[in-house]
Structure formats: C-alpha cells, structure tokens
Image (cartoon, rainbow, N blue to C red; front, side, top):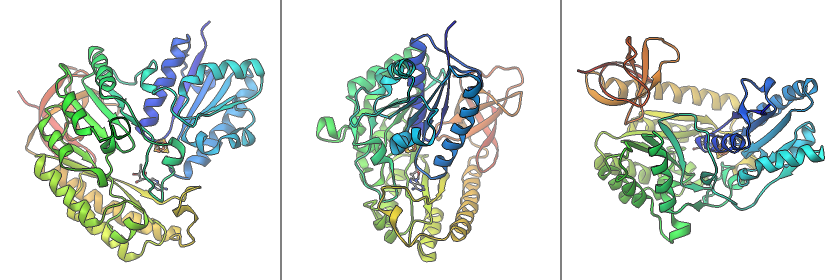
Length: 440
Ligand code: 5AD
Ligand code: SF4
C-alpha cells in the first residue's frame, strides 16, 4: 500500500508555494494525501518565523505529534521552513521524536532525507546556505486548478531592522525571464488563468542575473501569453518601486489593478530606524504616482505597531498616513522582537498594553476606511473571476475582482463555476467583502 502525507503550512504565500512542491515531490515517490495528521505516514510542518507566536505554536504542535507517534511508531515527523532555518539543531533538542529537519533552500532533498532518517533511525538535520534548485523546477501539487503561485525570486538583500527573513531565506536569487515565462505557459496549458508572482522584493527582480532590475519587462512579457487573464505580484519594496513598473502595470492588460505596498510606519523617524530607505513623503509620492498611472488601482499595505521606541506622535503619523492614502485594506501586526535582528535587542521595547491599545485604534480606523472604499463600489459593474462555491453559504459563489476584492454572488442554479469570468453589479459592501449580482 502506498504511504500517505499531510502538510501543515504556516506563514506567507512563499511557504504555500514551497508546500505545493513538497507535496509534488512526495506524490512522485508514490505518496498520497492523508485525511489527517493522525492517519499520515509523514507529517510535515512548513513553518514561519516572522513573529514570535509561531515558535510556541510549532512546539505545541510537535508535542501533539509525540503522543500520536507513540501510538504509530512508524510515522515520520518533519519540520521545514523558516522556523526550521532559525532553530536548526534546537528543533531536535526540544523535540527528539522529530525525524527530519530541513531548510528553505534544499526542498528537493526531502525524499532522500526521509529515506535516510528511516534507515539510520535517528533524526536527520540538513540545511543548505545557497539555493540548490529553484523549487519551481520541482514537481508540484497545486491547491487550485485556476490559480498558481510562481516564484520569481528567492531571498532578500534588504536589512529592515525588525525582519528575520534575510537571515532565514538568504540573499536574493532571481530566475531568468525565459524560465518564468516557460512555467507560466505550462500552467496556462494546464488550465490556470491567474498567476501570482512571488518574491521578497519583486522590484529588484533580475538584478542578480541581469545586472539591472527587469521586473517591468517581466510584467510586459507576461501580457503576450494566450489564455492568461490575470497577473498579480507580491511584494514590492517601496524604495525600489518606480515609474517603469507602474507604467507596465497600466500598459499590460493582464496585470491586475492592485498594488500591495508595505509601508510599515507613517513616521519618517521610525522608518529611518527600521532602515526602510524612504520617508513618509517619498512613500506618498509613490502612491500618488501609481494612482496617476494606473486608473482604478486598489492599494493595500502592511503596518507594524509598536516598533521599539514608537511614541504616540509616531503612531499618530501612522494613523494620519492611513487616512491620507485611504487603503483598501491593511495587514496590521504588533511588533514582535526577533532573534538576530537589530531591533530585537533594543531596550526601548513598547509595553504590551500600549501596543495593544494603538493596534486596536489602527484596526478600527482601517475597518472604517476599508468599508468606505468598498461602499464606493456599490452600484458599479465589475469583472469577477469565480473561485468556487461559497464555503459558508450554499447557493452563493465566491468571486474576486481584479482589484483583489471578494464578491459574494447568488448562484442558485450552480451556473457559476470555478474559472469562469462574469460581470456583476455591486449591491452592498462590508469592510472585507462585497455583495453582487450577475449582469445580463
Ligand atoms: N514583528 C511584526 N511584524 C513583522 N513583519 C515582519 N517582521 C515583523 C516583526 N518582527 C511584518 C511586516 C511585513 C509582514 C510580512 O510581516 O509588516 O511586511
Ligand atoms: Fe514567509 Fe517570512 Fe514567514 Fe518565511 S518568515 S514563511 S518568508 S513570512
């Protein structure tokens, strides 16, 4: 009988993408997906290290696995991803029942490591300092039929003082444009209509292989692929986000009118301490530039509350920036000190209750703004892509606009199927979704 696997993914889309490759590798070896961790022969935790609570969750999950493994001694427990990179040998010191610990740059080694751990009967821990094989070259088991993640760049050369990513994912490595186009063409011939390009800093895509950034060229090249309808990308860094990319967004018929431009703070003083290499004013100029060049652009962001030394005045700058930009949505995070980062060792950490209070205020402001932005859509007509039946409400379909907004649409006869495009009129708005009805 074939063996089974179960993967639990934490963190960002890059991790989702890596998990699809792990699943693909195992399926090529004859493994099949298991219905639950309890029933799997191989259980993989693909971890994230961006904030501290991830650490506690992993070790909690591993505690559960210890009990399950006592009843099924043949099963193997694997820890991969960013937290594995951060903790390395510590994982098996804390949880000696783990069989394999591996990194983000040697995903292709997974089947071999499972075999080695089984033969040796002791945990196998293996990492690679340089990216061996672009995971994109590995077999994949995609979570969606119509959408795919496409990694264009791994690693990050920036040094934001709050961020652990450069230390766990290494230096930037870009794929060649031809490889990316080849992968996208294969995906389209497999039924994919929408791709999301992934990189830690997509604006600098290509610099390491071509000597100059080629992200705008890549966006334009994708426009010519028959059958490809939508292209998204995440994330650009504001310091490198310039006119050629915004112009390419406007010119290309497939690149969606959505820009996720993480600001982190509205205070120029804090941005300097975060080593973000832009001021509040420079950031705002880029927002206005993008809005001018790309009509109908939706803008979203990431914001950190409670960076060390953040004063009430700094926070007021963040609040006023949020109002000034009028983001469609913002991902807000409470600052979490990370080992090995410049900010993590600072002694002026903001007390937890202060962070919580500011965070609540920011969230409330953004909810109001998101609702307002969505209400502006009511009465208008938009093109949506059907993602499938609504998970919560039967008889409705979940669809998405080019601006990345969710639209729930009545679908009583099941006419709206995954992958179809439709025109809808927006009838109602909430902070995180819209309601619509089919037109025609
Ligand atoms: N604490 C809180 N949030 C963080 N982020 C990155 N590092 C930290 C940290 N130490 C947030 C940033 C980034 C997003 C992916 O996670 O906002 O853009
Ligand atoms: Fe993604 Fe960063 Fe988390 Fe790694 S640490 S999974 S790159 S968000």
